[in-house]
Amino acid sequence: MKLSQRAQRIEPFYVMEMGKTAAQLAQQFAHTDQPMISLNIGEPDFTAPPGVQAAAQQAIRDGRTQYSHALGLPALRERISGWYAQRWGLAIDPGRIVVTAGASAALHLACLALVDEGDEILLPDPSYPCNRQFVQAAGGRAVLLPTNAAQRYQLGAEQVRQAWGPKTQGVLLASPSNPTGTSIHPDTLRDIDQCVQQRGGVTLVDEIYLGLSYDATYGQSALRLGEHVISVNSFSKYFHMTGWRLGWLVVPPSLVPAIESLAQHLFICPNTIAQRAALACFEPENLAIYEQRRTEFQNRRDAIVPALCDMGMDVAVMPDGAFYAWANVANICERMGLANSWDFCLAAMQQAHVAMTPGRDFGQNGTEHHVRLSTASSLAHLQQATQRLKEWVAHG
Image (tube, rainbow, N blue to C red):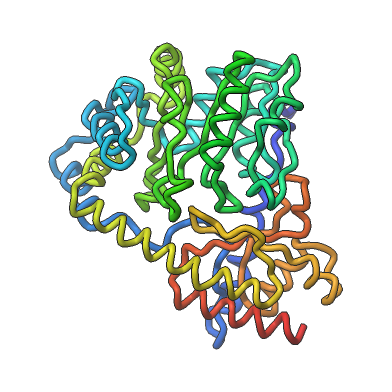
């Protein structure tokens, strides 16, 4: 059977491949005194609050499970708009909000609507691997631009200006970012956006971790720059609904009809039960729970990042959002005779029983020396994991 060129262009998702290995080893270690601690998947250990779960159950009992509008329930689009007003002081027209089957569907729709065969989209290196695959699946080319700690692993306006070519269609940014947990400074984002607008391009920003910001300087939505900006968001991270597969796009009014047509054909509509449940996310009592949990994620970051640095897993930039640490293990690998962070992660699973994600997925710029740890696990698990790693690194 002949595979399409599109399918052949898609790279493996090594996060998931490493996850398979971790799951297999976890079974082996399950009944030992050191069961596997998984810090490799970016999934909150919290689930949807009871009020959100109850809303889903009520929707099922009431039989409110039919197709919704392709753009999502009007009531949910209104609630999302209200959240932007309450949290960030932004007046976002609900008509610009498109509810999607997760942030993945949002990015897929945006790329299909905006990217033609051969178009180039600029992204930072490192960055979340699926984002560049959405560009390539639409026929475009993801152009990775190297970043460093001094840039907070984010693009700068001068980089964008220098890299812009005749085929460049725009930029795809993430703030806060996976894998680094760092955000773009608002002034830098404004400069990048001005550069893009001057060239008639598109500013597309993945903001799925925006609710999990810990620094007011960085915790601002790109939507404040104007209605030309396209923002991707999700109920997975801040709202702890990963498996519910629900997200949204905020797009310029002129783009809504095209997005709607694509959504009708590709997805029919987002999951109706998940949408009914998501309405409850914005009730005051549930928002209070989310904010309490956000503080817990920040406390985990504050405890774990210094512990990693102390053992030689250098986190060059303190994450200001999300729940990741991007740690350089080059010196440890050299001392332990390990070739790269992939070997480091395999050895850590086998010997310390701690699962992490090697940098291989996230780009080409120094990623072979880095690992991503998720700090979305409980503080007790994180402390236990860092203690195991400390002992293993010291005696390895």
